[in-house]
Image (cartoon, rainbow, N blue to C red; front, side):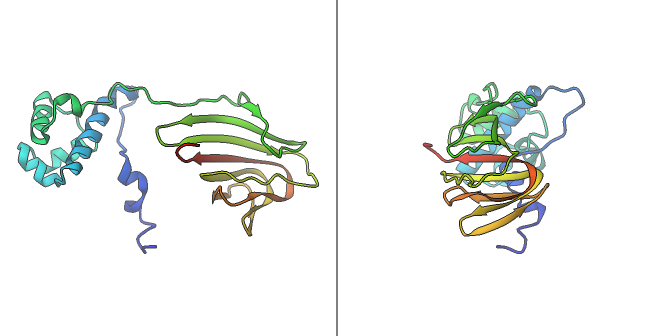
Length: 219
């Protein structure tokens, strides 16, 4: 691991996404066009292996302005949009693609999540589905797990993908493969779901923890 891996500049969200200010009261979809243009311009520039400086010089705008466009920090005029399209050899419509597409979200009010039964569910162990999304390449499942009673045996899970656990209440020892982790409020654990995993000892009941599973393609 690089010694710089903990620096803010290395955060995935700084590489793969954008962050910007929004005026109080402004609607999020008012900024969707800017975000679509930013994403499309950056993707096309990268595809043609052009630097920010090279593309800026090609279309006759400053490097600072192009950087702002690619980070959705400014509105793009029709004139600039046309110059960008010519410089990237694409129709203008290619630069605004995705601006009007609907993005999925799942909102679950407190206590309104569906109660589900998982294989190995025990008396006093409940699983509340907080939300699930199926995107282009993955499926995300979010559960609030409550363990209110101890039992002689505990469920042991295995599944494709990656799971994230965050303790809300109580304490337990949680096993993953050959390792056991003490989980207390505020603790988190990210694990490979292919290895057997599950509680091995319930220490302080009731126990509540958030479980988020990201399943891979085709699952």
